[in-house]
Length: 102
Length: 452
Image (tube, rainbow over the protein chains, first blue to last red):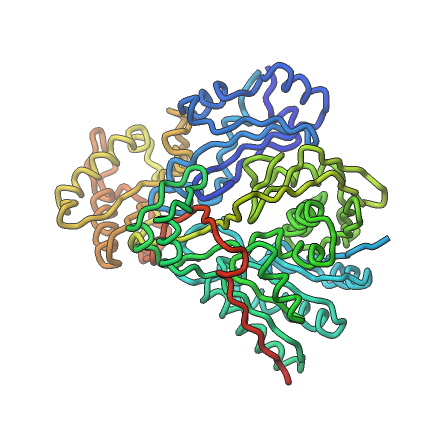
């Protein structure tokens, strides 16, 4: 079994607005990226499972060829900095993706 | 061939930069020095409370290099999203530092100051006329939310900045601005392609973060040509690579292909990154498409209360084994002592070592660490009520007699005395919407001659 941590150059999360955040995966190798893209190995269903949310809540999964990258957009349960928020910058929400085994 | 060179000293004004990099940038004879001073990342507090998230001494240090370099060489200097959130108090805070430096350094120049505050009436009128749309994830706007909003700003596009530069301002300090606009306003005014200029601005607003290795505290240079732009690092420690630039194009954006901004969108579907040697990357194919309606992004924050926190550690394995039930029972007991109806407020337990970062979404259930950090987080309508809720929760948890308890002296290890800390006012984003508006009308320009 391999994890994204083994093959990706970058796996990160960050706010895209106070109400949404994104997960970015940037591949080291064009072949790995092509394999993920052609097989749609990462899609809304996978993300919903990893993050314990409904598939419909996954706002977008975009494959971006110029950067060998996949971008996933998700809603924040609590807006950035509001009472009950846990991660104002949204910068530490990537771990489930990093350790996903395929 | 016409070129336009932009020097971006640092990712955020106040983050600093090496003097050697800055000197190297100046030696390339830039046509513009531009710097972004803000971000919504640090959360709603700074906008709502009128405070900067950068340090005054650090901003003064950066401006102490930028102002004399720009003024003495006749290079326009543009600063966007002054003071972090870019509302009136933040703008004034930045202007005060500039005035003080101009006097101390004996600099004479024409200063343009552009405010970005939005009158609540303007937004209310927009709402009534159907000219307001929520951005993804934001709730629909209501008149009540506008009434409760403490500070309201709009992200200006290139037009107000171009207006100030065309008026002959040597230094332009703008309130909240679309980050790339700060860099793109002048080259677009000079006839360069808006798509390339805005994409270059999108990269330069983070300075050397887009280089490899990235740094938020180093300079970067952008050279705009007719059909492409070139990125160049200004320190031997780093270089730009097609991968580093492409990766940055994704950064903090919901869609890497289409980037909406004031008045239109940047289309990066045909973009091409090329390594042209010596640590430089050429970028081509970025296109700007103007939209039929000009829309501005409006940001607002409202006060939701005051916070008091207590931080404590738990090392007892018996207690850790049933921490979830213990915290729920403590919450119930506190509710009984302080009925929510009489004492409204919210109480959160952030349990580090369990799920403080991901909350209900944490997939590693049942993997508690050998020690836990608990932050008791009370937010109430007054600071005194927050003190009471935090204090009562802390004392209840400290002496709570949970089942199977053997350690009967106290349940918490406090690192500090006092154990409870007031954390000040708490805000939340109340407005994050698009408003159909005139590109110039909402951003008044004030021009002053300094040092005359």
